[in-house]
Image (spheres, rainbow, N blue to C red):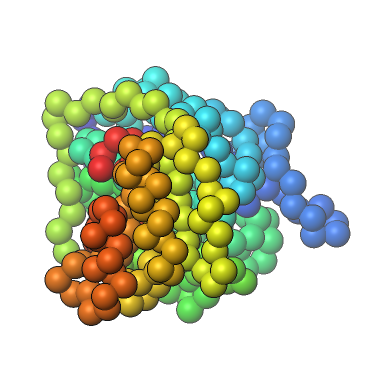
Length: 320
């Protein structure tokens, strides 16, 4: 497809999956999903046209499902992947996917891995309040993505554009996004960068960005609920964790790369059951406690340089 020129409206594939960005508020402030056909899409696009009519894109809408993101399942992720697989993505200038904030980091990690090498930019869009509410950042997040898309110049990859409560718009690489902390609406990631503005338009930050692959094809996926994601806490009962039907586990560590000594017995159980257990973040050469060395001696597999969400999704996709 011939890419859109500077004076042409971009053609985007808009995939609506629900979340706060796809909700409406009633008079009491209760949020509900806009379930009628086309009910949510015009609100986002209409608000964008009102705010910046010159930036309004040509849109092709797909709705694989509508769900509040706390209800996200592996089945929904499969449906999202199948929705994208059914499209010839090179027919679009970019792909925008709306999503709720609760599980955004997991879906971002999933798509960051699944769409690696995709020839067009992909942006995940979320908001902390429904589009029609005062103070919602949904339109700003979308407008930032559109402006970055318009100046992508061959850049590809999967990203999240999101304005935090400090009123700064940030660009996140999808596979590095971390979940919001409870009680906040802010997102953080390892290499997050403020999106600079010039002449009122968002510009790409400095840095290297991936290029698309001409022979890229969206790989097949088969997600099974056979990976555990575990966190240490005082009093954890490893003996209550069943390994039946489990293929692998990701166990996060405390900030000093340590965990309760009882984890060693769990690692022995994993080894006997043929379950690989990864611990993160763990760089053995930088670990200073004997407890970490003991975990490695009991078969823990150290990983570093990735979020827990990314490690979990890589295991589900068979990439670890």
